[in-house]
Amino acid sequence: MRLIKLIKNNLFIQNFFSTILAAILHPYLEFSLSKYTAIKKALYITANDETHGSYIEFGIFTGSSFNFAMRINKKIDKIFGDTNCEFFGFDSFKGFGDIKTVDIHPFFKNDTFAVDKEKILKNIKKNSLAQQFRIIEGFYQDTIKNKVPEDYNIKKARVIMIDCDLKESAKLALEFIRPSIQNGTIILFDDYIFYKGDPNKGEYSAFEEFKKKYPDIFFRRAFDYGYGSRAFIAYINK
Image (cartoon, rainbow, N blue to C red; front, side, top):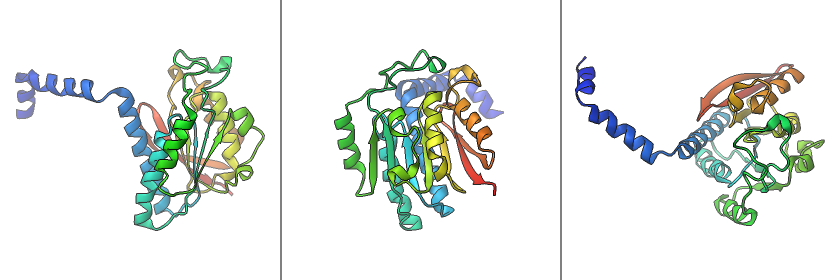
């Protein structure tokens, strides 16, 4: 009761903290920080469970989360020992390309996420901390459609980051990586709640269709993060 009375009589406290939050913690920054925390959780959980394999990221953009994954894995290896994790990133660096009708969104344009490839690759190499990584450049239609993980020497997946935004891209990513999913693989969907909750659009729809197509893979909701992002852990029903 004292606390409630204090708040009621001192509105400046509310104004102060809301002003600080609005001025300092930009939504994009908050979203990025939550993504880092999610990657940290996923790599920690998989290391603790001895779920070995690669970290695969679809949609690396500026490489910030990819770089963070390599940095935090170095720390986690000091706790659990060398996980021998390799890092794979897939991106065109030219944006989405031609967006299909099903994926039309007011924020997403063909070149929304186009970046300076050379600058990004140089920064990734700098942040790799001598860990093994590979960046596969190109649109998914060319790099992963009708291909399998073994084509890029990917065996088992430890953590998968689906940061594709679009349904079409997420579908291609999931179909490609399916053979590498194992018990304990954690999949992070970074844009799970977009498209105003439409169940036929975005990463959500791609994942729902994937689960129906492959009922032998059970996905348990692991945790939520950010502004509507969600993580799942896989188990193969044999």
